[in-house]
Image 1: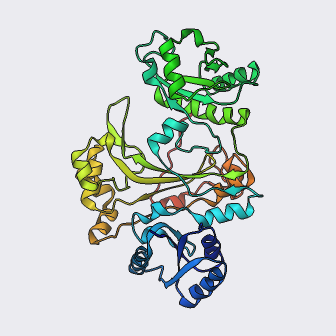
Image 2 (image 1 turned 60 degrees about the vertical axis):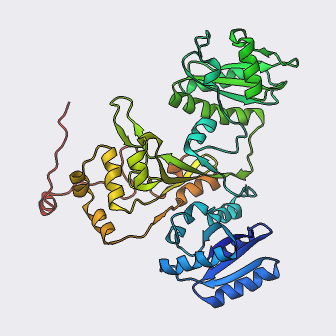
Image 3 (image 1 turned 120 degrees about the vertical axis):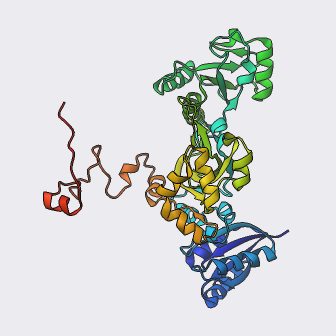
Amino acid sequence: MVEVTVVVGAGSIGQAIARRVSAGKHVLLADLRQGNADAAAEVLGDAGFQVTTATVDVSSRWSLHALVETATGLGQVTAVVHAAGVSPSQASPAAILAVDLYGTAVLLEEFGNGRHVTSPFPRIPFREAMLKYGSDKPDLRAQLELVDITDVFEGSEFKAFAGKHVRALPVPAVQDQPRKFFDQLGDFAVSLGAKGLAWVRVAEDGSLTGPIAKFLTEENVAELTKRLSLAAGHAVFFGAGEFDEVSKIMGAVRVEAAKRAGHFESDVFRFCWIVDFPMYEKDEDTGKIDFSHNPFSMPQGGLEALQTQDPLDILGWQYDIVCNGVELSSGAIRNHEPEIMLKAFEIAGYDRDTVEEQFAGMLRAFRFGAPPHGGIAPGVDRIVMLLADEPNIRETIAFPLNGNAQDLMMGAPTELDETRLKELHLTVRKPQPK
């Protein structure tokens, strides 16, 4: 079946996006004015692209629905890309998950000083991202992955790993690395809060050497060799403890080890979608079920999932777009059905009256009838961070606040006189001196 990419907007950005479509795919190029679409199609056709044109009114969801129907008649729709200031979620809730944000990609490639934007963008479930990368904002330039090996040491007599969550980081081609390489990575882990960083090396004969090698049984070695695809020249770093703690520390060690061992790409922008976020989580202190991320997102499976599934197994229609370890934006498909919204909040401990009172305007609007909708909007300041190789977002925000939440340029906040406070029926309660 022919793969179809829908591009809304036939201007220069739309054409640049269309040119990024790989050979063998079909482009449905839509614009408010048929003449614009035809002119752009002629240019693209001369360049060897397969193009069909259509008109679309981006302010009308019905027009966008018709556009998607046209596209599905041409083949399998693999991406819906907007270059005309319209969210693709207006077309359908599923469409936004097919968007690869080509407009952002074109921008990064044009101003990225030769850095290439990789595509398509992989979609990584949240739980998989936490296991493999230790973060829901993975830097995929680091070409190493973490592996959960907790079961290998279940019941082990090695107290450092027994009864704990254990993650391994295999690093190939480090046979020429000196002991300093391992010590410095250990110091890096300690700086993040670890008590140390266990490691072993794989010798030419396949045996393991290193500080903890003597604590590993033959069964441990055999299973690690198989599970981690170990070979001569490999090293393995280990983290053990609580899941979140191990994820944080070993996720950072993964990137640092890749940089130090030559397994890190520095000339690319590697995007990915993080999807399938858990809808709920359990508070470890109280045992209470609460929302994990966005309480207003639609649960996958709708009302049936809320009524029949364990809350901790329910996923939300939520997604983040990440590039080089930077979260550019979060988005979601909105929970637009009042009864689903009420049930979702009930699971988190909010009764119907509380929800009706706190979110009366939203529920009233939904009861008048709202179509499925959602969206996402990458932040310009975060895009500039990537282009400038600037790790601190404060350096790319036009008017950042200082540590006391003050805007030094505007001189804000300022004190209001009593007259203004009385007009607004406000009273200032200053903290008591200690």
